[in-house]
Image (cartoon, rainbow, N blue to C red; front, side, top):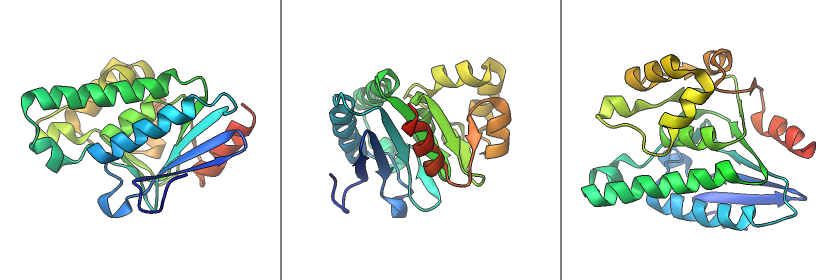
Length: 198
């Protein structure tokens, strides 16, 4: 469905679709081109009545990182607002999907990628996965819905601490706080098993 040169690779097996972020050299950053590609793919998949689950995962030791910081630095004020709205609309589409959505988090899950995972119904992570919203260290805060979705999962106090400190959170801490549902050696395999029962 997607070529190897694409920012994402999509595989559909029966009633389950897997979207894999495929730019490991760029830490699977959610650049504007990646978001455009992801928007098109999500739109096509969510419209398919026969699909019952959509799984998001990454490559190597990275699920995905957030927006491309170099692109952000070049945005004018109006463009920044449009960029935030673009990401919000995409992730809301994922949140509203009639299919079961699962984030199979195989490694680093940073910034906007965490916002994407928060938009999914279920989050499963590998033992070595690491989570963070590092925006505070850059003088910014996520604009893709994480500020709303994270407090619903972990509570307001934990979410505030998460955003303000920009600290790295391990899978163990993420599980204890309710950020993720399970820790699995192979989150994709676990996600596939859940999807098969959906």
